[in-house]
Image 1 (cartoon, helix red, strand yellow):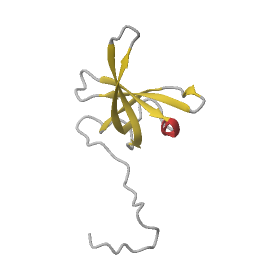
Image 2 (tube, helix red, strand yellow):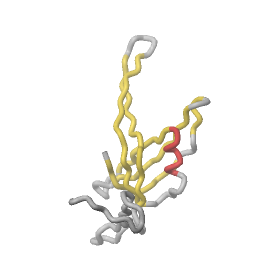
Image 3 (tube, rainbow, N blue to C red):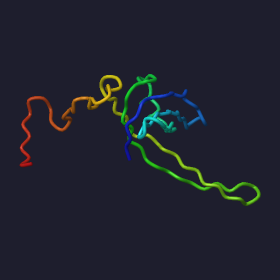
Image 4 (cartoon, rainbow, N blue to C red):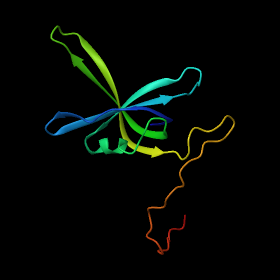
Length: 123
């Protein structure tokens, strides 16, 4: 899943255990600019470094997995929790577009061939 939004807040790395760490990212998602939503994403383990170069106000595209799990308390009552786990971030170039302007995106990079190498695929 993917959404585009603006970085609102970047959390500190939380060392949950000796071998597990996570980090939160709050993204302002404005499908309706009058009523923006503030969505919490989390990065786990080595993906926490994805947030290092971000700053509040940056326009980004977040690729994430939706995860859910049950938890049963000592009284036998079950609650359900959802997590949005980031696996890729793409910084969108420039700042917020002016009204009526199309958003600007980073130029794609071909990582499939080395420099000077011809691609012989027919498609």
